[in-house]
Length: 550
Image (cartoon, rainbow, N blue to C red; front, side):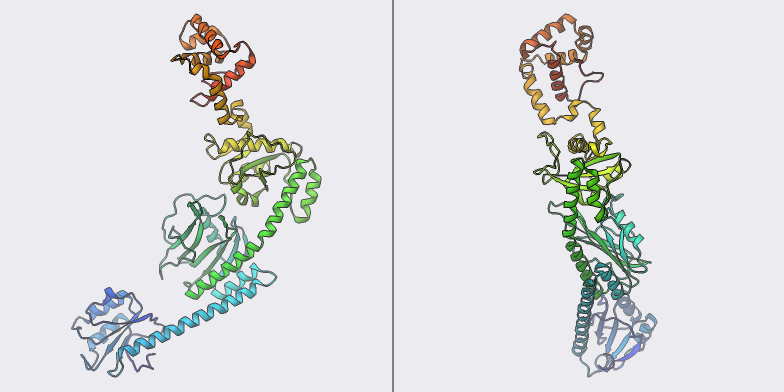
């Protein structure tokens, strides 16, 4: 353009200079109205002796070059301006009198349009090459290799757990996995703390579906997050960062609430607009390949459901025979059955033999009691059968409440499944705290922990109603509690209440009359003990109390 327009270079070098627009200004300080990478045109109308300050302001703003028109205000470019531009390395061009500024603006606009057309054409060509690679037998692997060539760097494909499925030479997979782990994007690896902006590390940024780009030359990054339907923070939308090691981007793959995998790419140079277009095209092709594999995944899930049917029917050898042709294996005894909400399916699948049980269609051999309700949304429970040693590790991947059975054999699987479901109900309740609850611990805390809390409170309210309605004599309930806690021993119960034993005897006769029950009957005592424990504000029996003996 310089030769075509008849411009004469006076200072600096125009080789490799990027011009994004043309601006005209006669201000002594035009920088507040500039963005950088402009070719600034002026006649020097207001330029005086402070050429060094003028040039320094332009350089600090990132101006691409200065065009100075001669023949109007100045017959020649001031020597002081030429010297200042040369010292600062600012390209300075002399604009002849016959060359209008508008002509220079049009020429730059035409060049920018041609450049954009070339970028679009190159992007389409790269997309075509990526598409042809996706149609090859190796599919996603070919796309990863082709992408590495297109961007002049590296690319890698990871599964949802961060394991490498394929990577081109030089891929910095360790860095990618470390950052995904730090941000809590991998199942079973929660973020250690809030992600903040750090040099060369990702930080939380605005949500968006496109690859985020740091400012040119900066060492930093951003990660976008998309919100789920419920409005909570969801999976990362994109991840990009730059630093001394180069520039990297990571895109999650899959259309569900959880990523089906991750696709990473890196280059020594910042990614151009064409590069970002190519990256997004590769991400779409890889996502499509994963979604097409969804049908295969559903078939595998149906197969595991059939295998579980065989196990519950007492046919472990037939179950193994079904799994072996597809490369599946059953864990060795002793086993532990884990139960988790339905949304933990994808998190548990890579780590255990996992089946989603739909409550409307119980698995054969499993008696479904109405008081055992699965807390999973959508009416389902995820069941994982694991070896005893791997139980805790597998449960951690669920990321929520988990119920665990006691160790068992394949012959005891039906009972273990029921234990895990009951433990899950406790884990998802108010006292469970969304953690791992083992049935062995649950059973060791008394019969009341095995009952539905709501049903137990309703039973207690109905049974004890005659006592609670008896005027203001609330001491009848506490007297009954002390009497049962001391297994009917009058002296011990009276001492606990701080009353005379004859007073306690009178109260117990009144209790028996109001309830219409014989307090010497072991069954009546057991029912009253459960009712009192269900209504105890402390959530159980009084300290030092024992379950009444029959």
